[in-house]
Length: 280
Image 1 (cartoon, helix red, strand yellow):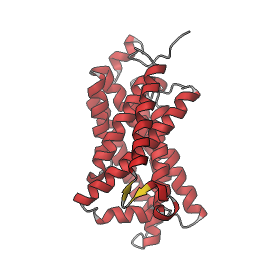
Image 2: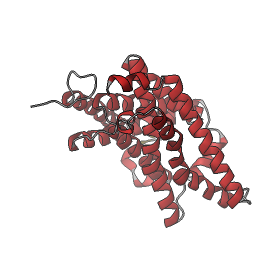
Image 3: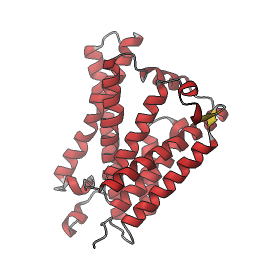
Image 4: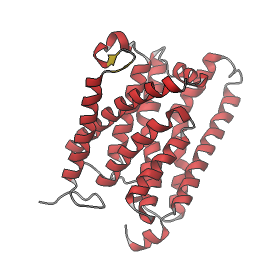
């Protein structure tokens, strides 16, 4: 980023406000569309359709306000959102990191629900994510596994974390961006899991100076969540569980995968603060 862009780059508070406004905008537009096109939204099936619409079409609207803001500041989208390519080995390690942290988050979720029973709306979310038809699959897969990881990572690990890094040290940048990501999900019982996952994704983003590892890791998590919500894990994936918890062996392999993935990122991008790959 050149000096002129650094001067114009939004402060973290500005970036966070833009993100909050984006979510308010999308929620408002989505509710308006549901009122106009789903007047009987009290019906359970129609309400489920409305949530699927939000997951697919609504998520795309999250980028409208940030893009307008970036254009008004005469900034480059590629720089702000970290739209930089990554090599195939990093793609693979991003997937492994995402899979590992997702499994660990699953066990953490199981432990938390032992202490704090899940509120009723969690069951409603699970029901909304139930695949009953090919149409359901297309809506949910597109919204959860493709659109949501792209838009959310553009906003959090791209726009917000980048602004934090420009104004303070990277440790605080990753932590604050992860906290923001947990907050905007509006589900307190998931906050710890989301925060920890955000730390890992933020680290990979900073080290590679690319949003792609975070998108891959995020998409992997969402795909696993969608899969587990629609299959009988206890009978189909018996190796995965140990009673009502994730198997210790699976957890150990997951932790090893995350640690090894992070090490591979540090090996590929050694001794850098802006993620430039090594030169031969």
